[in-house]
Length: 373
Image (cartoon, rainbow, N blue to C red; front, side, top):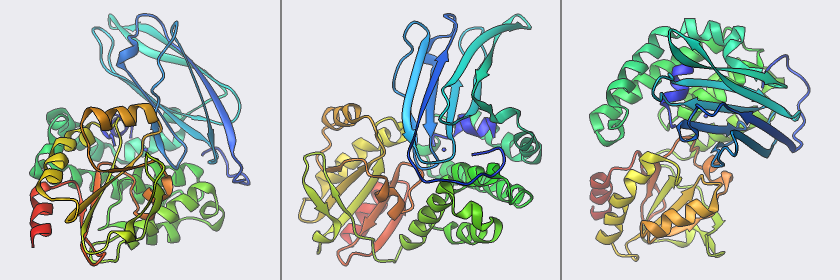
């Protein structure tokens, strides 16, 4: 899974304790040596509900991250891209309400600077027995993903045939993860893995199977945790938002403070676009969606953007810079749950009768044909 973390943009442990759905606060202090370039870091937070990239920068080689969470632990992902003589680094840490400290250092190995670390009030997932066993169990599937990514990282989402290979490779990893999880049904690692690395890749085709797996594998205690409830809501969202189903209604505020209700747009097509300004494949789609906007007038097609951005400034700047002339909603995780969206970009095309007719990676030609017909 160490490799998978780096490749997907596209996402809690120790023994199970009583879970309280109370909001908690976390604080993480990360320090680094000056020879590690700040712009080579990719850092994110995952509270088993939302993945959020950390947009703050290191100041004097120190980064302080604070926030709130409901899950048992916050997952901190740190990735460092290969730079000069320093190889890439990828790791996950689990944080609770105690102030966490992660001191990144470099050590010499074979005449290269290797990234290492010292931690305080932090759990190192990659050194856990669970993770080591998982790596061995899934080594062939992880290697297949690494080979694919090394060849196609910059172009897979632009090519339909590569999308299918990517999807197939992910499905093999997912299936292997589920098989592994079944061996440890009482482990909190298992429900975390299921939420952040299996459910996050779910789609309309496998959501019912995953919901069945969830109900059969985990204990009642784990299902009643915050993470368990999030899984249940998301997978039920997938089941409800399948093609040929009536589109679940949406009521939310747009960036101008206006109330938007999906069911108000009767007798016209509606394209729901789940995206974020920090998502590279999402940004790739913007010019194509703009062309779709030009092709069909407002009385024929409504486009509604649903963001996963928590950085409002970046979100608004991207909208303005790219002349995105359609409805943009403020971030609201309920909307992702209603439609079972865990990965972006994802689009839903809803016809004049309010029925979902397409749910996939954005395909302008297919969507244009559906609207015209």
